[in-house]
Image 1: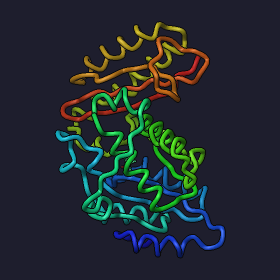
Image 2: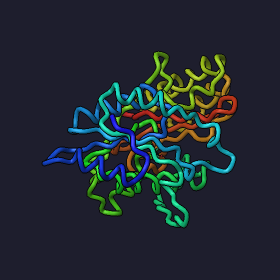
Image 3: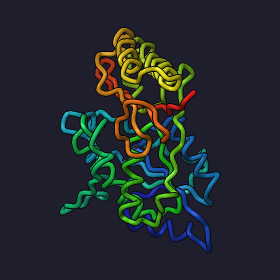
Amino acid sequence: MQTVKTLQMLRTALAHLRVGDATIALVPTMGALHEGHLTLVRRAKAEADHVVASIFVNPKQFGANEDLDAYPRQLAADAAMLETEGVALLWAPDVAAMYPAGFVTNVSVAGVSEGLCGAARPGHFDGVATVVCKLFNQVQPDIAFFGEKDFQQLAVIRAMARDLDLTRPHVDSIIGVPTVREADGLAMSSRNRYLSPDQRAAAAALPRAMREAASAIGGGADAAGALARMEAELIAAGFASVDYAVLADSRSLEPLDALGSDPARLLVAARIGGTRLIDNLAVARA
Ligand code: PAF
């Protein structure tokens, strides 16, 4: 695996990969890799000739009081994992390579960006859309893979690709991969490492309470009541607060009062200690 840090080196390396009709898959990450990321790489490898991974801790998607400086950085260990998985090329630009002096452009996706995490983290999804748009243009992948754990992020990226008529990748080639979970159900996340042992044990209440709420709503229970019970269960388990707990349309992410005929999703963000965890589950009629 080759690691490149400048756009010029990236273009040269990509030209060597893109021989004949060889296809390229992109797995964008911010590093601190875990099994969830490696699952994306394995899916990518199964569906393209070459996998390009990117590692870039994107300052534009962190708010002023968020954890940009504390965000884990472990490039050598991450590179070793990617190499073992058979990644062909690692794109690991620094901030000056991604946002050279004079960079003034912002990609902003209205609608799906605005509620849920967008409401709690102003500017976050502009930062995500801007960097992913750049990564798509830099790598020009045939297909790209993102975790469904960041369900709203996936919706934002798809809306951007659709609205900007992107072709590499086309919106239909932006693939959401189901969330990878720990044995107790907690969704894998680079932020789980911030949890103390007690908080980590208590955090298992999140997927458990979500599964209960999803199955109650799917079984016909009143959504507002099921969400309120879930919130109470999280607070009782040791969560400090619940930022949101919403039943939403899977595509528009518009909140729903009840299950309809379109696919629905339960989305939750909750804080335990200083760590904000997010998760989501499909809700289907039983
Ligand atoms: O999900 C992430 O790791 C990041 O938000 C992404 C998509 C790599 C953009 O920085």
